[in-house]
Structure formats: structure tokens, C-alpha cells
Length: 50
Image (cartoon, rainbow, N blue to C red; front, side, top):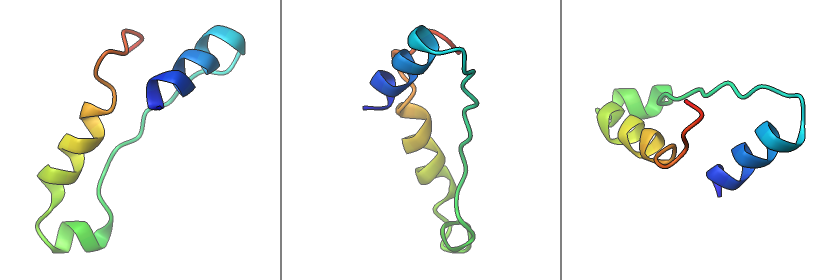
């Protein structure tokens, strides 16, 4: 889903993509930072624009 969105934006518009990742305060306080960031980074696998 993310790849389709990024492909569309980069190939069909003049808009640039800014990739932002990070955990919420609640996730940080729960000690889930690595889990959350890993999941978010994996969403960008297969996208060669970055």
C-alpha cells in the first residue's frame, strides 16, 4: 500500500516525498521504540527512491 502511494506521488506529480518514522510517546514509554520503528522501516522495503 505504501509503495503504491509513493510510486504514484513520485511518478505522477511534482510533489516530493518526505519519509517520517517514529514512535508515539506512549509507545516510547512502553519500551516499544525498536518494534515500532522496525515495522515502519520495513514498510519502505522494495522502494528504490530512498
